[in-house]
Image 1 (cartoon, rainbow, N blue to C red):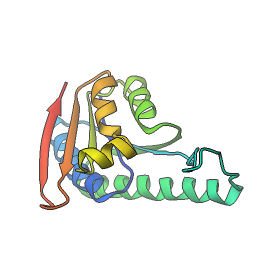
Image 2: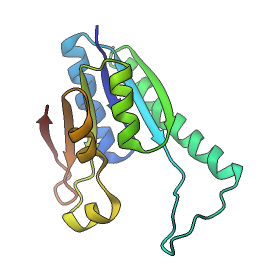
Image 3: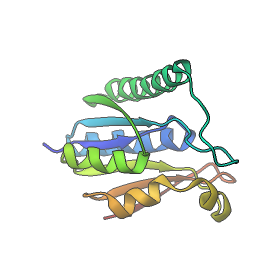
Length: 155
């Protein structure tokens, strides 16, 4: 059976998306594949690459592992079989690659609910995944001012 791929960065919007991913996995009788992608910042505001020590890399890997393990634990406590995977790289590219490799039936991802300017500066992983994923994508949005969940589905 095809798994549901849940991509998380541990943010509040990802927590909202996890609840939806668990509900969908239960309803479909699917396993949940939890994916966390980490990346070292490449360019500073001045346009050069800072040197990054091994402790920074270890901290990022550890944070990603903690986020993934917490999501797996939450899913298992809810009665959903779950596994996790940690990847390094561009989040949207790695999420889409994992969806292809796992033959995911659906990708579930949170969105921060940022305005247009902040999204332009920071980029939008969820928007890129919607456009590039090989399967349907469920984006669970968290509005900063409302702190409610607004669910949008794209395929």
